[in-house]
Length: 167
Image 1 (cartoon, rainbow, N blue to C red):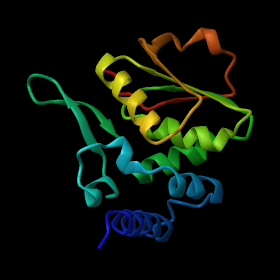
Image 2: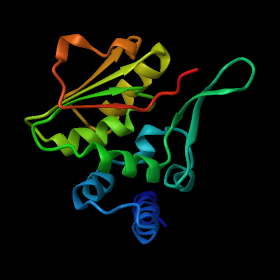
Image 3: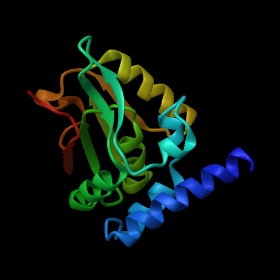
């Protein structure tokens, strides 16, 4: 089986499972999941893992504690439904991680909308920028900063989502 066929099957399987579980109800969000290739935001991960309905650890601290992950697709769908983005919205995300959620939001806000995503970890911010470019997702501003105060230069926001942990 070709790699493209494997990707298509894995992606459709994930979306079918999410839909059957009642966790993918908005056609616009489903279309975004169909269009944005999750595996491009998880380089080096086998296709079946990239399209599993699981969170994927991205970075661990020296003690082995996961400090960043790519969120579980089901949780992303739930959060995006609650966020209720509309075309033209200006959205701020705190916690870029892989950049995948920012890519989904980019499609939801359309060409007239804006997506700004703030990431505390420079390595992750740089990787997310590369991931977005590799997936040909443009017009997402990735900012390396502490998102605790948001990001004033692109305010006022129609919606803010935090996909970051705090302790």
